[in-house]
Amino acid sequence: MMARRVLLVGATGTFGSRLAALLAKHAEVELILAARGTGALEALRASLVGNGARARILVRSFDRLRPPDLSELSPWLVVDAAGPFQGSDYRLAQAAVRHGAHYVDLADARDFVAGFPDALDESARQAGVLAVTAASSTPALSQAALDHLVEGWRAIDEIVVAISPGARAPRGLSVIEAILSYVGQPVRAFRNGTWQIVRGWSGQRMLYMPGLGWRWGSICETPDLDLLARRFPVRSTALFMAGLELPVMHHGLTLLSLPVHWGIIRSLRSLARPIRTMADALAAFGSDRGGMIVEAIGRDKQDRPIRARWALAAEANSGPNTPAAPAAALIRALLEGREMTRGATACVGLLDQRDILRELAHLPISTRVDDGLPQSNILFERLLGNRWATLPACIKTVHGGEHQTLSGRAVARSGKNVVAKALRWLQGLPRTGPHDVEVMLNQDNDGEKWVRRFGNSSFSSRLCDAGPLGLFEERFGPLRFKFDLQPTPNGISWEFCGWSFGGLALPSRLAPRIRAGAEDTNGFYRFRVVVSHRLTGLLFAYRGTLIDRPHFQAPPA
Image 1 (tube, rainbow, N blue to C red):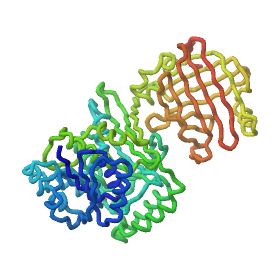
Image 2: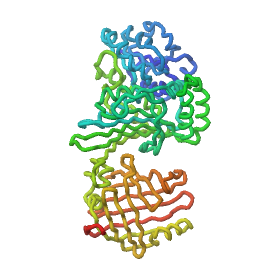
Image 3: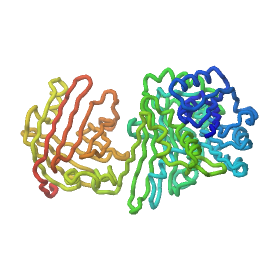
Image 4: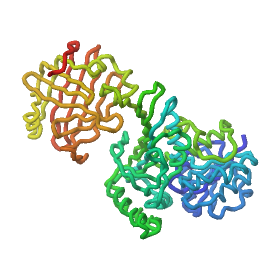
């Protein structure tokens, strides 16, 4: 088979180098690494070869703003991963199409993507090639995930897509320039059923991102703002948001947006280098974990109100591979003859999310899907949605919304430190040893109230919906602990994700470590709780089984 020559422009950039590594796996590819400087290209080539590249790899000096005659290189496909695309034209894409080559880019500029089909569709069809823009995290992966998430729904009320990189993630200058190009500028967004003009990097909200925790998000200017409202029948709101892991950086950028909004300065793009320097200096205070979420609210195929979320979490600085994955998946489809579309289009509706995630399978990147039924009278069904039906019978019996009293046996352990002793006295926690257990469970639309008796000790708490999909709070007076409820093969787990006192969020670095859950053991409800702290060790723990069948009772007067 004749080698397919792929010209990768911007190969040494943050995303281009990741895409080069993905394309280098194809033995049928002759990969030309292209950028302005050959020194970095040679280093990249050596790295790819050293890591077992199957493709033949060449290097070529190349300026995307002044593309040479492509007949000399004779590419089968041209990839533009250089950027920034804000304010850019289509000369490289047009040159590729004129030569009869397929074209793919990773554009994130809203105007560039919006004008791409009109500029190239007719010529691409005449040339018999496919020209695709925005083959990146947004809109390619975000909308591929959304296609699965809302499949069969009768109505969609709201969509929110959000991305948050880790503070230690590599930051290319072109990426920072792209962000700064819209900060403080007027941005057209679909909110509350109408198109509105908002300030770029406004609308701050806290987002829960599974695997990452809580991150700030702000409205961004991206192609998804147009494409979400165009491809999906959204009745109320369709937003794209991005966030910086460190609050000081995120809110600092919000403050910098104000002089642009007030017309004092024209743009923040000139601050790209000093902002990158500041981000590098503060990176040690953040993590190497980034990710994205796609959330939707609407009505499912049974016409029930539903909330759903797809989430991706990337560990160990693997996040920058994600924007390269859609382009790699599309090129794979072209190489294998599975993609026969011709013409020019944004990268939406072309790829299944499974094809994109296949390109990331070798990396520490995970995804998950959650849904909830917000109008259910049962707290855990509200949180788990359709997954509630898959839980073991004993779990559903205990948490099924009835008022009941259960009994059984348990073993408790209490820490020997001062904090553990104080907690046992304040909360009425049991002493170390075996105990007879009685649990009185009162449930209503607001949640569950648990009164636990371990021998002569008694303590109580209340479980309530915490707002974000899948999260609930356990309340001990003014002290509240947030948990992400997740099904397990035999039951449920409570994944600790935050705490507060009197409504004031407390630092996660000072939080206790909590492991809790319940499972079906031979048809009985087995529970476990372990609470410790990195400074003190064990605070308290208990585990046991409710061995009596539930005795249902009327709620107390």
